[in-house]
Image 1 (cartoon, rainbow, N blue to C red):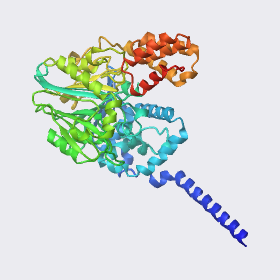
Image 2 (tube, rainbow, N blue to C red):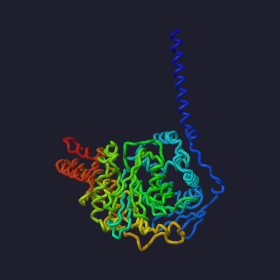
Image 3 (tube, rainbow, N blue to C red):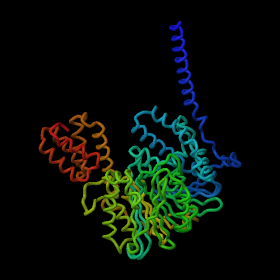
Image 4 (cartoon, helix red, strand yellow):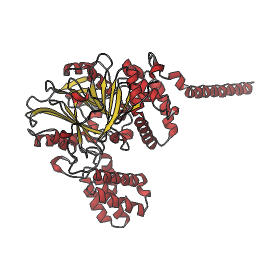
Amino acid sequence: MILIFQKRTKKIILYGLCLVFALLFFFILFIEEIFEFSPPAVEDIESKKKLTVESHASYKSLENCWAKEEKGLNFLFLTGDPFVQGWAAGKLMGHRSSQMEEALLKRAYDAINSKAVLWFLCKTGYVLNSDLPDSFPVFMQKEIYGFSSAIENLHPELGSPYFRALHYQTAHDLAHQILEKILSEPGCTSFAAWGSATENGHLIVGRNFDFEIDGLFDRFKLVQIVHPQKEGIPFISVSWPGMAGVVSGVNRELISITLNAAKSDHSAWKGMPVVVMSRLVLQSAATIPQAISILQSFSSYISESFLIADGKTGEVVVVEKTPKLTLLRKPEPSAHTILCTNHFFSPTFQSHKRHRAFLQEGSSIQRLERLEELIGRHKGKISPKIAAEILRDYQFAKDLDFGMGHLHTINPSLCSHSVIFDLTDGILWVSLGPHQSNSYLAIDIQKILNQSPDDSCILADKIIPPDPHISPKKIEELQLWHSAVQKWQKQEKKISMEGLEECAGILKKYNPRHFLTLVAQGDLLFRQGKAEEAKKLWLDALERKPYPDWIQKISSRLQPQSP
């Protein structure tokens, strides 16, 4: 009798487990239907979807929106109904956005090394971010819905286009919260100078936005000129196709804003993406107090510094924001400069463990030291041209040159855009790739806000010439160096002697002063039985500002065992 009862119990448990797994399977299978975002209601949507692109001699248009390319820089003018603005952006520039989506997914595939895991993460995102649309104002929901409706759906397995388009607005947040090593290393640098610090007393703002994948965000950088439909201030945003938020921008009232990621012990799973906050600032703020008030009224889910400047008054501040606090950093009264890398200055954050760890492991302090040195060296002479020199700088403090592409320098040659504002004259300069090596193209802020597509968008007489030290050709050579580094690191000890010789040769040819070049050369010498010569190179590499994770790798090579 007991034996029969035990068998029945086992069957019940077995059937129960099967039922649980079946329910779980169907839950995951239909999770999109359960948690899919409901798109916002759009009046007369079918007639709006019938709007088509018209081609002209030098531009394309849709309704009153238009897009053109000039001297290698893309411009997109958006006005009218939010859905139509998004629809126009998708029809005019959406093909570039699709290429960027492919690049982002490839980076994620390479890092995770499993499409199944990426699929599972996407499913998890449906649950965790089921209320993501609530983090966007309704007009942005409609704009993003319009964009997602206009582009080709290349990855239906990863959710609806609207689902993915909303998540791509959070790329900056994700890159500095949970996908830091996959998408981007935090390395943005910005500064402002005015009064006695500048050549003619003008308010000058410079910034590097270091977020780059496969060169696409650099090659297809986009200057968006946006006119809100009803109430709101027209503004300019420098980013990439598909980005409705703002990472670098300025409005008609000459309020500029730039973002720099930071670290703190404050965290949250929910909050407004920082690029949405920045857009709301440009679209609504005519003064710095108004901008601060807007940032204070929303909660973020990452830590971020916002450098905000006002060309009308010459005022500049940095807002240091976490999910729990919004603090204000003002410049020293006599400094006439304010600098921003990727760490907070406010005393409140100095005890935070993540902040302290980031200072030790990241590049923020070293970039700040070099920035302070260069700003001090040029004090009283800072102009847009000098600002470009500072943003292009690839050396360390005291002019130490440890090669190009070092992640702990102001210019590691990976920015997607570099911009300079003369907010007194109302001029914006945007770097023409690759990175900062080519010209900075000049744009009249007020003129372009009411630009005719037939007219030139660029002030030809104010273009800042290409970098005399780092040419586009050198950037191409640096890419060959990066490829050789990746090949060498990927195979590590399994690399053949021939492969190591090839990689070490390329590294030495194109970037001989970088510590990674010396490490690779040392590995080659060690393989060749020249241990003492290898040791000298490894010791030299330790003196060339190796990244924290490489200090241990190099030190282990100096031990008696093989590298």
